[in-house]
Image 1 (cartoon, rainbow, N blue to C red):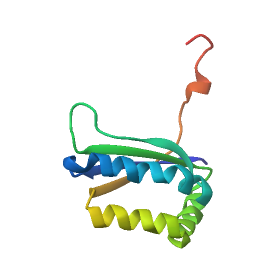
Image 2 (cartoon, rainbow, N blue to C red; image 1 turned 30 degrees about the vertical axis):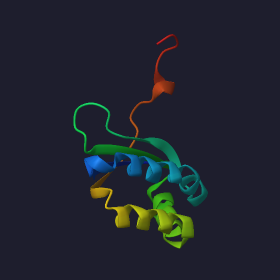
Image 3 (cartoon, rainbow, N blue to C red; image 1 turned 60 degrees about the horizontal axis):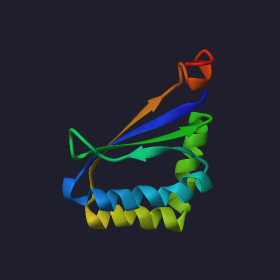
Image 4 (tube, rainbow, N blue to C red; image 1 turned 120 degrees about the vertical axis):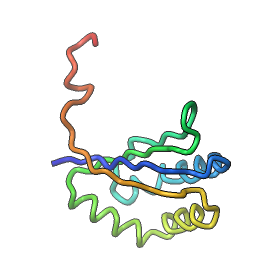
Length: 110
């Protein structure tokens, strides 16, 4: 069963540019390690300290293999250290979601 990991970040609101740099680095790392990066979203209006990331996997086992590859990837570990050293991310929550519908399910013309 496919899953999507929904990551909710609580940021230091004065470090959103650093978070954006952190998120952009994942563009090459996540696919290389086996994840399908849907994207990252930074605050725009409303709460200025909440950001989100979405990454999909074919199965929960694929996610676990991805996590192991991340821990072995020097570029991934450097990006984690960057976020930690800069104290960009104050808290992080993960939810594991399964698809019910998608755009592909919508009738044509909608």
